Length: 171
Image (tube, rainbow, N blue to C red):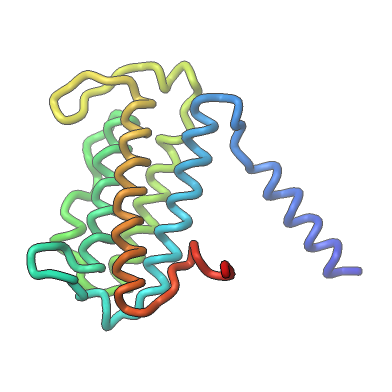
């Protein structure tokens, strides 16, 4: 009975925190939460000894991709929040799996503030890559960038014979 009660409480809490998919920013927040979870799980799944794996010499290693994703969170989300990038250079300064995973977690938490905007705030403009654009565009760009690199992580995992977390349980 106690386990059932705890399960129900957990489910209700999860529903209470679910983004409003009818709002523009709620939809963006849901996408951010999904892709952040997928990337975090993929970062955890790859063994430390494979964080230096590169399919070819001219591409980033697995760890460098994860660190690059962390860097990008600060780049995009600081533009939305209106702050100077608080943590540039993760890809160049973090090398171990533990350091990179910690940086990724902190970067996604930082971005949660950007994705908490109202629809009205999301329509406000900011500058990114030399152009004036609405904040929702920046968040969408971040999501697209994250999904692109999640695809890289999935490919690297498969090349190492590891089933990606997003494919676990499928037949």
